[in-house]
Image (cartoon, one colour):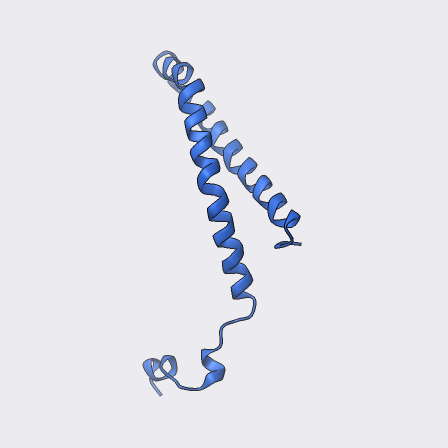
Length: 95
């Protein structure tokens, strides 16, 4: 049996989706729906309030700017993950 025959098999057991896949997919889609507005809001806030300071820092001290940019990126990712995990637990989609 070649690899193509195994994939195209009509055996229902081979075509069944892993039961843990659906909750995983639902959780992923919900996280994406949550992330999009939060990342957009964060981006707008940073552009509005931190942009002049970051631009000045970029021109005055590039090394400090790079370190601060990494701190902002790590903080944003961590806060988004904490908030999303909390929200998914709150609505009962994650234990």
